[in-house]
Image 1 (cartoon, rainbow, N blue to C red):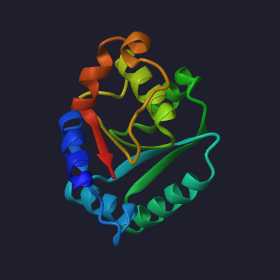
Image 2: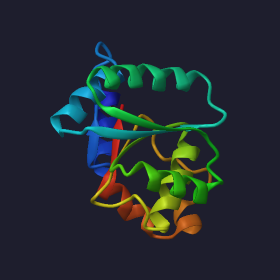
Image 3: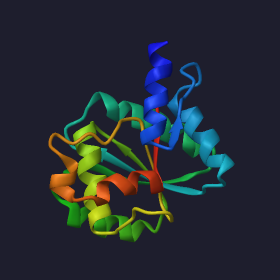
Image 4: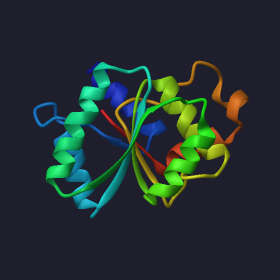
Length: 158
């Protein structure tokens, strides 16, 4: 019952919430989703100080590669170097992104890009298995952009 309430609340915040079947795993679920959208290319962005989650990213990558989805990778990213992230993403020429890290890292990358109006909006799709959860007030830090940009392009996979 509690899980149903949580999913109900999350779908109000995140209009694109996909609940992965644990028996299939995140990689298989993501592969099915991307194939149904006819996605050929995705960019993976992973956090610098994260160890156990990198293995999850590796497993997801393996599944997607078997489905012939091209994967560009931006590994061990420091969320404070957003100009570097913008430069790298521009070279990848993709519209689908999977970001792997804790909530503060995801918030730092996603909201910083939204404020710059780079790679966030209706032309782009962001996938993550964690909520963008900043350590401080996102509206004070990044402005009101943070409330509207999630509805445009963020897909939480849990």
